[in-house]
Image (cartoon, rainbow, N blue to C red):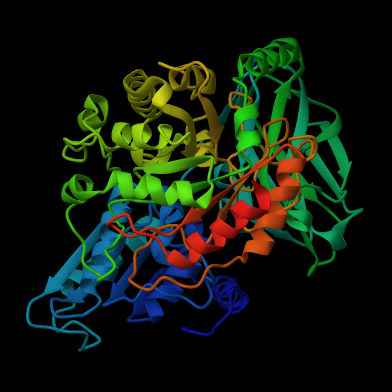
Length: 593
């Protein structure tokens, strides 16, 4: 199976083999560009793969669409899928494919082995001495065949509990994992979780999902023992239209007894080929703790700083200026040197010309580098800080022009997700943000924290309340966004919606978004991309995705309804951006300001 085959064709082949007695966790093998297709299926089905073997791989896939396997390895690392790449030392794809996968997979906590064969190029397609490959496959095929006993998920009587698809004890074949850690549900079937309830009681239930328009009216049931609650599927609403996820309350209460038991979400009567919904999680809320939960919710809302300045600004810019950014000529300087040579004044003048009221500067991203001498950052990521404090210099240059600086930080790379345990992750995040805030005070007006929905799933005990306090260090008026992407908010402890939309979406509703959906109750903020990517990793800079009229109309309508819009601009390692994009924004300035 290779390039051009659809996900369904792969799934059908898998089902045919399993139905005829083959292993439920096969070995996936790919050579050259076919490896990308093997990876794409593995990413979508990490629980159905024992290991991956790739010979001189090219990590590109037609089946994967926009989110290519090389950028989407977290699900495999989380599932513990071992990987072997067998490459010729002269293969032209070794450095920009296998070495990139190797670093990213290890950073995610995954197990990967790379064999480099001296004197070989892209050919031959098979190694002359296959023993190490055969040993790898035999070892991991046997390991993968063993079915581990599912771990019981703790359900506490004093706080909500989230049940995700990845934590299920069993899922029917109609429930398939897709990109973004959600599950596509087709036809009738069920998901079952094994849980450990610490105290008996009644629980309210909510379903985080996006309904398919053609499935409205289908019946869902949540059951445990003799207790059950039901829900008739309605259309989910929100800024993403028919693809919007909501956290929908289900009427009734589910009775859970103390001890180990099962909870099952089932759809009994849907036609076999019907797409029913995209499932994210099932939420259990202990009725006995409702008052305390609501009290914390109100406390979080009272603690929020004002976001009026963001709405008045109307629009700003984001720059993914990272360790992966390239120069206009394709060269790539060491990060510290690039920081030393960055022309802050030229950069600030460019931002001023666009009319932006603020910028969001990316600090760390896929690789956790920081352009400043932060002790806590250096403690946890040695060698990845710099002597020059680019953050302070940039803040001063921008503030002098009336432009605010906010900072992006990546919870995954900074907090060593998913390899770190919950205590270590929490300690890193709070220590770094505390020092960061105390160092920059009013120089940094806000944070945009990435990978928060992944962190919440991995670390259910992480205290967003304590993290919120750390984010206020040095500046109680600093505003915070916790990126939950297309999903409902991960916590009330934030001020504005991260709004990773890439393109324009539904307009604000009185400064916020649809109830129960992404951004509900938070200041509306949409984050667009001017180029079809976030980081400038190649020389070519494509034409802007939006015209001045398109951007100006959207920004103007958002601003009139109390929202703000940020546009991510591609930026080279020397700090230069596309002059065409700047010209578009200059025209936007005339329309909006």
